[in-house]
Image 1 (cartoon, rainbow, N blue to C red):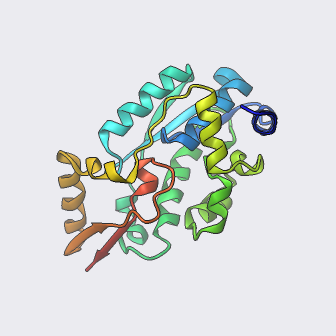
Image 2 (cartoon, rainbow, N blue to C red):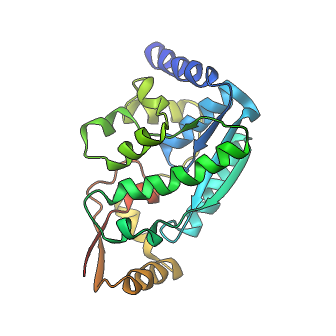
Image 3 (spheres, rainbow, N blue to C red):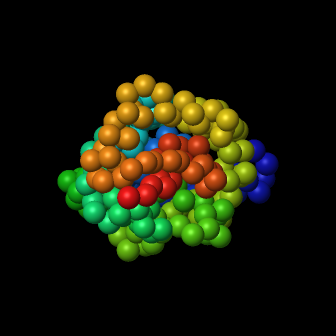
Length: 223
């Protein structure tokens, strides 16, 4: 990577090193993978990766996140999240992502406390600051930090860093997103929404940015 990008990456590593130990919200997307690698470079085994498993997360991507964690050589835990059980999320309001992320960070907070009160970080980037991102409000409310933003890293730069470091990652182009609906996962999601009283469910991929499934899925449903 070039000098400016290397400097930003070192800034990122320095930020994480200053935390002494950390829980990384790890989806396996390009942003969280670069963040995880930087946490490993900064803290070694004192960086704990945590991936959510829920009805909205394809089993194939969970398996890939596990493989990425092994590739990075970092400790990894899987936490069960139940955002569909939250009435606020099921109501499908415009701020539903707040409750999705709040569910995630609630589970990660329990993991952090089990390990002595570790800080939690996630892979928000500079590009996210210009969007309507209720999930970022959930992070702020929970005291979850976004080191990629603190290091002023943009999506293009994160991708370049990942490429320079030789990192594999989960990142599907929009044309391949229909693969997320193959097999039993699609049927399970639709069945759960019907139980909640929805007549139909569609997916809007206009907000797709990072390539991780749980960030790409934005529910639009009508009772």
